[in-house]
Length: 408
Image (tube, rainbow, N blue to C red):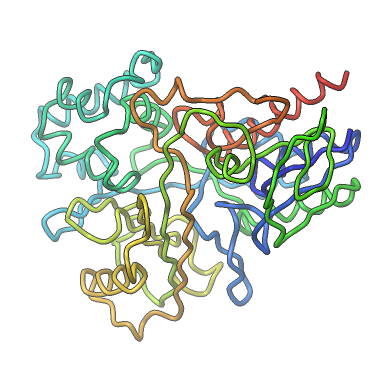
């Protein structure tokens, strides 16, 4: 079959690899680069992701893909430390002693939080889909634990929409991040960056005869008898990996609205690190970003020749004016950094960065096939109730299997 794929992110590339070499594949990517949210900047002699990334021990589809591409030896496991910035003070929260000394929670609060973490892997997430995260935590653990611990996390991921997020998302987040040692969380990364994965997928697709069109947005999708057309080009099947509302805008099927949010992520390079060894620092105090992610407190700075920091922000609607300048000004003032110390900085903005896992979200998840057109991506079942590389790869593989069954 001749198959057109809209979107050259992880799902689109994974589905192409799963369908090749038995089908004729053509990918349409609007950007001049592949990878979507997993794309990277080239800085001097190294690559760094536009948006912070790591993987988890249970990501078996990702690991299988790495093995197929000959990249398994590049996967390494490191410790990701965490902390909170509260009342103008930076608090690491990794060792038992650090957690005990955190003044924003009482000893009883900490005991309740530890018990919830232990129970999270066995909770029925489907029963939590209609319950807000705030309601769940306040009722189970109390208002102070929500305000001092969970609200900063929800704010860093969902901004002003945090009150709409379901308990299913929050508990899945706790469960996936419960793989911890006494010094932090066990997280995976590719030596050389995830650009290595995207580059290998591109080469594999092209080596097997697949076509990849960059800077080629899908401007129209139309039905023509028993086929679909992308930009007037006919295909036996089409896979769309873009947000459903964007697909509907160019002629795709109408399905219930899936709420999305945008992301603005400033990446910067500097000579020193300022978060006291913490990889992921959630902001409890008000700031124009929800988290400071110091990549080089996770991966050694000598691989880059400088320290790398992400300032992560999410938004709904339009991006606030001069977000990059506001984030940089706040970061410099808060962490006593002179602007001359910052070697370079870039902002990545994606108005469709990911779904908002609001209450009732589960009922909105579309089937892979919609009126003869196939859809897969961050909105697909494997990415519920939390999106990830693993979920996006799995969605690409599963939609490819649907098409294979149709053609058999």
